[in-house]
Length: 297
Ligand code: GRG
Image (cartoon, rainbow, N blue to C red):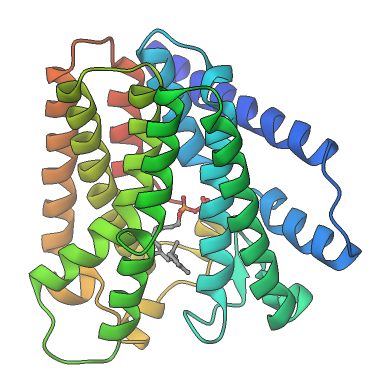
């Protein structure tokens, strides 16, 4: 019970640490025209779990470093994540009217402005990554990981495959794994590997962090798919029940909910095991894994 309270306090304090980083950035940034400024801020500020920054900060601390060391890269990653959600919600993609419990960006500002808000967030994120590169080789490696995982060999590849297979016959486990690895897990691999790069961890440690991020990504996506059938709008902040209606290649559509619960347990176990193998104190991340397994939103 005490551990649980400590976990929730730390989760909240890391989330708030990121909100401070974001506020500082927004305080010193003003884009023109006003509609661009508003639409970018709208999606950055309407909440979200901030899972990727929290993971990055927790891994930095686990390696003996500080939140501040990776603050700008966490900001860049969350900006890329936010752009991907704006574009994913567009009528040409997932066509969703709600995100994070509020009207999605295009419902608020129109499709054209939503596309531009997403483009702007992606470009600003790359600008931050470039600026971080001036801190030296370790930061260049970290920035490179973020850009690779988000790009044509990462999240965009996953999204393209996801879109391709929607409503199409012939996809199985291999296609589903490709989508989850790229669309979901790569961004989480960035979150956990950036601190390892920044602190110049040896390559075995970087590989362990990436392996953890990958399995955490599978756990996260499978629980996301389960929430699409058993979650609520109030808790998830998005429309539920869409995967079946729109014939998505979700794990629940492919394997059924019962098997997905088993798969989620499997990936949860793998995440715990990888953390056990790490030569660091990992209590917070261990609890975060269980928290994601049991999440309702
Ligand atoms: C448009 C290039 C492009 C990519 C879109 C993010 C994404 C890729 C699609 C959204 C749909 C989806 C199921 C993505 C998998 C990853 C995922 C579950 C994202 C939602 O992340 P959360 O739950 O979001 O961390 P919050 O709102 O909490 O930040």
